[in-house]
Figure 1 (cartoon, rainbow, N blue to C red):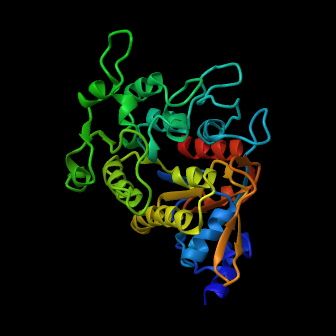
Figure 2 (figure 1 turned 90 degrees about the horizontal axis):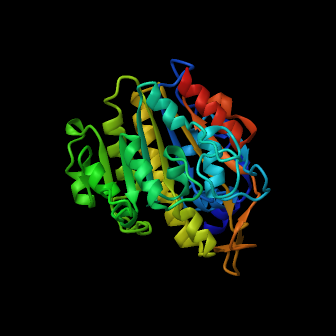
Length: 360
């Protein structure tokens, strides 16, 4: 049984083709008012093969559009998270390491900032530090990630919901004598630090929410608390109250970190399944709100990962590197506007489509 499941899991991207899945609902509009972008950091086709072996019934099986993403940077064939996330956030490729800055260090407006300007609610969720590359690229402009200035910019950005780790950076004392980023945010935000506090939160009483659940990175799945699915559900419940719609980015960063470490099948499968559970929360919301667009992709590929089998027929992982590769990434989309993500796209093209959909 396991061997046959492996054969299904590694055939390739045709596994996820919408023609092989039950028909999804037809959106009632071509323009989404609610956009949820899921990013599995470092996840290429090999990561999705792992997910499909672990559970053949993935949420993306029923998505109506499938694409591939070319993730090269402005001046590098093999990119990294800041450069890649900035392309998704702004629709423009830039230099390595910078957060939503042009090659000459000019801030580039992000899709989150456009959403805010249009009166939409916004949210960022991650399993790593909120000041890390992917979430920071959507809300800040700085030459590097995980800097005190990134936390201070995020504090001033008024993102509706911020959930993740990185408490340590938000509590660093600025050298100019100003209050910490966390102290500044607690004047405006409801603040939680534990899964229990998040669970007992009443979304209808919250205007702005900050959750910092770890000093640094959050724990690995399945021990992570709160889970990515729980954070996603709470965020959607809060963002849904905004009549102008919302933009939400949800990242599982550990799909990248564990591939950098060349971890085995069970570790990577747990992270991909945690990601799938978060997508399931969004899909359940989409069934009730057909104006919702869900996009699922990555920022780059990590590990040069392929799935092999051992002498017993059990799946085993083979890596070619502990770093990143230029591998193309799967992209899945469902809801109004999903068809625009079909085919082979650059990550900057994906970003421009997101910006265009928010601006409509």
